[in-house]
Length: 251
Length: 199
Ligand SMILES: Cc1cc2nc3c(=O)[nH]c(=O)nc-3n(C[C@H](O)[C@H](O)[C@H](O)COP(=O)(O)OP(=O)(O)OC[C@H]3O[C@@H](n4cnc5c(N)ncnc54)[C@H](O)[C@@H]3O)c2cc1C
Image (cartoon, rainbow over all chains, first blue to last red; front, side, top):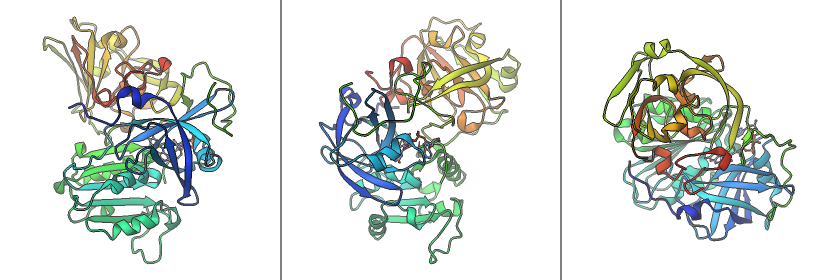
């Protein structure tokens, strides 16, 4: 396996940097996009994440990983945080951090769950809940005329769709297909019975194992386990399925 | 402390001296892998050890089960910042597996079903520090946690404890494994926070 190049020298990527919140954008009732200004940010690839560290007055720190939701743009780093009930870091980021406040971040982290501009072949993105965040960075990085992309995005209900308006625009773009999978409540127009992701949600003309898309699967651990198993059962080669697991519980 | 996040108090805490720096406790058992979970049947399972001169030692599932097993209770620390205390495992000590292996190697590359690899100094696999584990919490080790068998090296970050272990390649010189090539630390000591290369 070749040593993969990722942005930033090693010492640059492991330094803790001060990151100041410059904008917050609500996405759903429970998810918010945070735009941070990170001094000297070395840049990142779509799919990578950062470590965010909060420091209390007594020196106590709490560190969690958050995926970058948009392609590289100077010192700006965008994260989208889904509030986890009783979550120590996510609730603070979602509710407590105000514009002008600072946290520390380091990264980018991860050189496997990435998509590189010019990488050949179609791309199948499979998201559960907040797992859409790094996949959105990948989708946003896709240029016109690139190979086809398909996003299969599992949400509880219509109100839980992060990036809803932008996804609707992207879905109307040539070469991009977006399919929403509702697990608990669906809009009336949706003919699919509600329920967890199943084979028929992933099987589509042009998106079989033989079409050999690179698959990126991201979300809560249980979701990723289930979705990756479905892809393997549908004939996708295991080494074409890249996974990122966010945490313990499922949507 | 020079830097404070305004308004952040954090959870009520009594600092636990079993928790390495930057880690937090979890009661769950999170899963970290690069791809899908491998499903390896017992009848196709074979564990091998290969030395630097190419000599191979192999164990079928039945042969592995026939080796003396130990039950150990250890704390585990994942590089993504969670730690889990007092986890109970059952498996075969690497001291047992390597007892009759002749080698001058200083390093090991651990190979998994699915192609994953990770590198470790051989001395970290010896002296009661490492196991091939096939039981967890009184049960069979489940596939998403690395079953049928995984390496268990609890004193290093948990990516070194390769899931779905199939072989151990003994090497004279160190060489980076899967995550190590992607920028993670070659050694990975949680107490020194060796998360990434250069830490
Ligand atoms: C590589 C990586 C990338 C990530 N990217 C993102 C991202 O882009 N956006 C995002 O919102 N989150 C992301 N996460 C998850 C994030 O790191 C935290 O785990 C999450 O925000 C919860 O942290 P907390 O401190 O709020 O909760 P904690 O205080 O750690 O936990 C509180 C309770 O919630 C449970 N819990 C912990 N994590 C989750 C979870 N992910 N889902 C459901 N329940 C959970 C715990 O078991 C516990 O019971 C990512 C995780 C990883 C490993």
